[in-house]
Image (cartoon, rainbow, N blue to C red; front, top):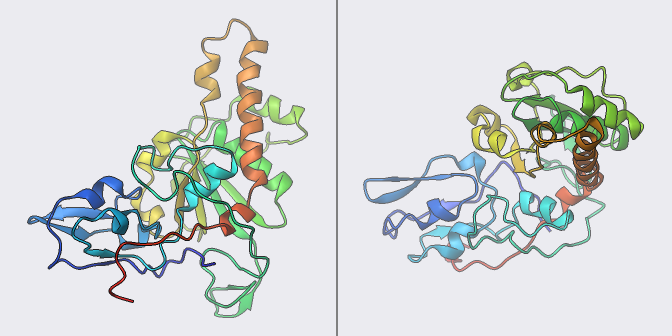
Length: 282
């Protein structure tokens, strides 16, 4: 079992490339661009090493060691979802992943210090919490709920943050339904992602489609960006005929987000091993 690492094994043989662009279509992270009738790796650090590109390249011009499963797919599978993480019906390894038991000796996503440890900025091995940012459009509801649940349920393993592409203010009904569940988020502040740009995140979990599509490139370059989308309670509540009906939308999404947080960080330790078509670089 291997962890996704920032040292990416992705390789492209441009001499073999026929410029068909299939890798651009199946890659959930927009790693590739097409230039001068040849594909090029433009965002290597964003690669999830899922292996979808290598398995679908007709010229067998791509290689990814082991084809470790896409972590977004693992999280969605842990919630019983079958939709591919990229949101497209592409032949990707995470569309129907097989769950494996977590390795108790394993460390975090950027662990290169050995089993069960992390390396601090000073170079010393240490066990520490994973820094996880929950990102949505306005940091008003879904990401705030996720931060609250992570602090409540996983405070011993996760250092949780939330932010938005924009700042819309904390929704009172979000505060209310979280309080019903015993989680006080009234002291959390709505903020933009720029306010946390100096935090060395391990993972960024986008909880709405807009945030996933507009996640800043500088953020995806320093952390693994995963997408697990949820309905927008404020948008659903606009059509409600009463506050109680509106609260029903908030409660449902609150409980769905709790289910996500309960899978962390163990679900991020479960990566799918899938065979690749191309092995000549091994």
